Image (cartoon, rainbow, N blue to C red; front, side, top):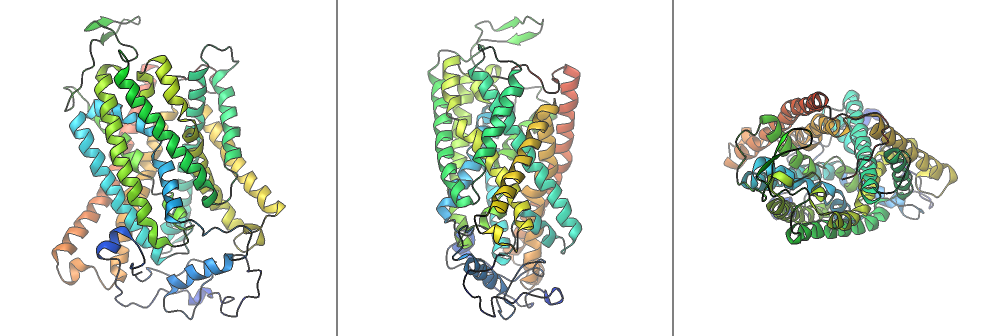
Length: 530
């Protein structure tokens, strides 16, 4: 942490010696209960820590409540500096959440519903949203107890008994996950430009457009604080909402979906038999739906909701982290309504035969281009958001105790821009050299989201309940204790399911793509437009 421009007090200069870094006293402290546990606010009571303060974190050793001391000191030491990080209100954090979750992935829900059936698809949408909401609240409670954590890597180390290998393992997954998401947005940005300019003679279309998107994303990543990025996030979420609203309306008003054929069945140019006629909508999965197809559709819904990997970084820049649930609830409610309505309506008008992922491909050419164009801010900003989270991870560790972290210096800004540029170059290379990128992204999600979406937070629940004075389940055998313990065991098992079955399905999809000849070439010049 940089020094304050004002003369610091002797208390502010105190830093725990490594030998004195020990958990808070083992006493029973009330944790968030009742309304405050679900909705936050000033009445939230912060429970005890699960372990010692991480190395390099300055705290006040005379304070009984080290969590409050760390938070107060973080804010105090930033006062007077040109760049301050703990400045986000819950409204600004909500804007970041909206920009992360209200995104292009919404337009893949119609396809998921076509595989799962409309009723199971809608039920799973609500169930997954509720699970992610709960685990995000557990994450929030953990961050309240340990306000020094800067990202999910710090949490990984603390959860697994302060072992450095846990930090390194989490860091590898964290950076790979974020970089692959950046690569996805480079690829989708090129897809948009290909869709808009299909008739124009552009040499090596996809590679050229990917370079353009990479440069634009890098420039948009340069703001240093989430408070600044939240303004871009608000615009991104608004444009995304307009985009999916237009796509939903266009699906209903167009005469027929793209690719419509009036014949009930016909033979394609390649000799395959295809089903045509009016859109077919099913309430349950159609006969013959395979396990791989059904689980792929379910995982598609799940991965859209899972985004807890960024939440510790958002909470770390809130001036009052106790208000985080307000932002979380606002975003979750919006997700359930938008995802369900858009998915169901678009599916109803495109049916099993004509639905595409993303569903813009099911619209007539003019409607497709108009609605897809409003998605531009999100195509750029969501990649920017993950790039910024990764850059913070590196930047804060380089300049943790330097003035370059909180002041406008040439070294600070050059390093920040350089880190971002490196992440975007890596994202571009990944997007261009892996011909089965989409399926590989599913594989990475299975491997990483199993931990970041579920396993971490089930473990966090039990670690926190233990330092509260013992698990309620073992202490007084209450019904609530049993139910909460069972719920968190199921959450851990859900993560294990994603890690095993999800990985199997993702690998099988890659194999199927190779066998069907759908795998493209490295640095392809061919258009990938809708």
